[in-house]
Image 1: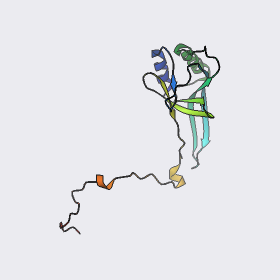
Image 2: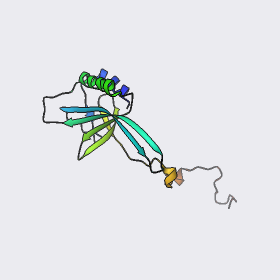
Image 3: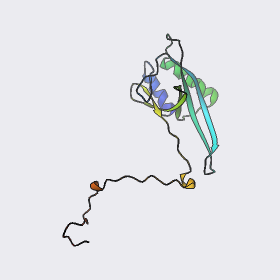
Length: 155
């Protein structure tokens, strides 16, 4: 989800809820401790120089059970970040403390912001010699008009 989409959703909400991939909700007394821009400048395994930028939201739970972050407060934090950090309309990455610090993508289901699982991938498969995955086909699903039949004379 891009930052503009998240801001649009926040403008329509009365309360904010984040849902983990497991379906469990982040406790509603969470804090957004950071809104920032993360720049990753790197060389992939094929020798290509790359640069990626994302907007980062860091969610944190405290023992502050009376705390509730309202959409308008998060919008103000985002606007300050855009102004002072020069954040554009980038994809959002969310950090959340699970067993360790976990990174998620962000989506929305009409009610909750959904923390979506992220996966690593090789960016230079053509240079590494990694074969493309072949699609699996059930032979019983293949129908051919040229199929051999007993006594058909095709063999």
